[in-house]
Length: 138
Image (tube, rainbow, N blue to C red; front, side, top):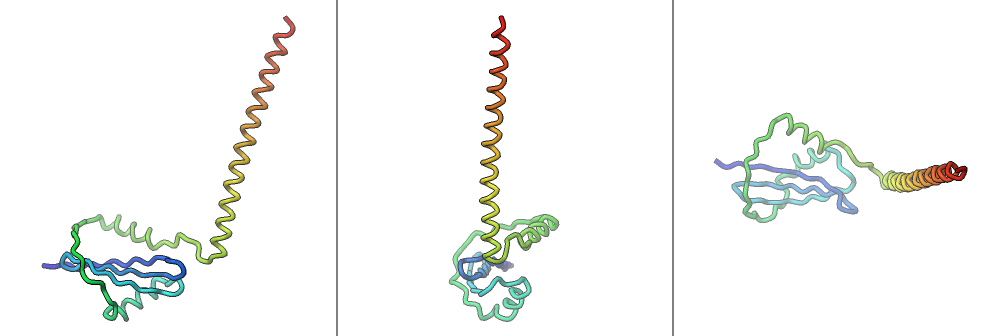
C-alpha cells in the first residue's frame, strides 16, 4: 500500500510570493514551484491548486526517507492555526514604520539604562559624601 502526501509552503522571495508544493509518493520527493504576484489569500491559493494542479511541472523524483509521524489532532490543529495566522505586517511602508519604532525603542532603552546608571552613581557619591561629613566632626 502506497501513501501520497503533499505539502504547500507559500513564502515571500523578493519581489514575488512563491508557492512550493512538495509531493512524496512511494518514497520519492517531487517539487513544483509556482510564482504568485501579490500576496495571495488562502482562498486564491486553494482555487489555483484546484484548477491548475494537473498542469504543474514537478521535478524528477528524489528518493527520501518517509517518517510516519502520528500527532495528536488537537496539537496538529494548533500548529496549522499558528502557521496560517497573519503575523506579519503587509505593506512596505508599514514595515518601514515598524522598523523605525523598533529603532526608537532600542534608543530609549539605552538612554534609560544610562540615566539609571548615572542616578545610581550620583546616589553613591552622596552616600560617600555623607560618610565623610559624619567622620569630620571627631
